[in-house]
Amino acid sequence: MPTLEHRLEQVAALRTILAQNKENLIRAALLDCAFTYRESALEVDTVEERLAGFPDMAPTFAPRIPLAGPGQEVALILPYNGSAWLNTAIVSIYLVGNRVRVKFASRGSHITRLTEDLYRPIFGDAIIFDYSHGKDFMHRALTAPNIPAIVMFGADRHALQHEDAVRAHKKKFIFEGPGKDPFIVLADADLEQAATELAFAKYLYAGQTCTAPERVYVQEQVYDDFVARFLELSRRVRLGDPADPATEMGPVISPEAIKAIRAQLKDAAAKGGRIALGGNIQGNLVPPTVVLEATQEMLGMQEETFAPVAFLARFQTTEEVIRLARDNRYGLRASIYGQAEADAVYKSLISQPYCHPAPSFQFGVFGTISVNEPRSETWVGAFVSKPVGGYGYSGWIWEPQGDTLRLKQGPKLLSLETSREPE
Image 1 (spheres, rainbow, N blue to C red):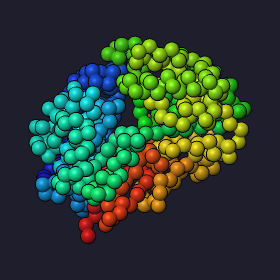
Image 2: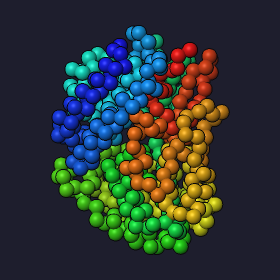
Image 3: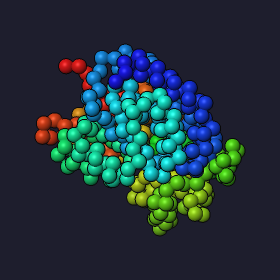
């Protein structure tokens, strides 16, 4: 394995080659994910910026020992809802000295082959791209003695089923999963700022990010005013050909997500919800959809939506909204807009700044919380110097401890979790 200095030089070379291939990366994202030209261009720019932050982590990385020793490698399973940003995850694991075996989602064939073509001249066989079937890849990762650690992005229902195999084969298992993020608007919030941020974060990538706001809680006194502002912004979203730079939102990628959206909307209508905008799904195109008078028992307030569908509910007091926000099995991110009581809500929902041992899954707290802060600021340095991850079923680590597994929860850096301090 090259020295850390050389590995950082390789990452600098990767930044250059990504910039040179920006149009190719955008085209691959259009083909595989139907992300819009604008979104894909933003993603390339963002990953270049993040990769530029890795040299600042050199003092932290230098003394650490990779979990993958000679002849070993870390297995990395990537999600389907990403293209350029996935480079940050790969590089995080490599920079601490691990060889990496990467599995992109099967629907990302153009992204995978382009990424492999860009990586091979820089990293050689230190980063391997695997084209086996997902189940075969996971079976090998779980059982092969030369793979001490697995990093998986995906659905919690899939990750949970691997617990026995992880324990039996003594693997370190690092999981990054879904979100059902609450977006809280207090009565003294700047409503224009809050509505603008909600519209941006909700409709970016057609809602297909784990950190998209999905449960919107608005205090009774400003509910009608906020709804009016948000509906107006939602109506302005430009749909169209993803390849057109003027298009702001494209289709939903997954047929499974479309099925879930239909079920959530049907359930909401049956339980008193009112679809104030959208709802007319055509194939995989889901227009901006706003469901009002949402209640906690609705599927759309409990299950991940992963689409441009927002469920808005009223609340009376901060005590009530804290209870509602905590009532979910996912704890990735929360957003709060308000003044006088915003800090109290923040303190009630936040946990520890870095992942830590937990006796069991911790529900009702969140890994990242922003207060009157746009998404663009929240994620500066994400996966590089800013730990990312959550609580409950939004993410966890299983770490072998003899014949048992130690559970860890909270935000994490893949670099630190695929390496260890010297003894």
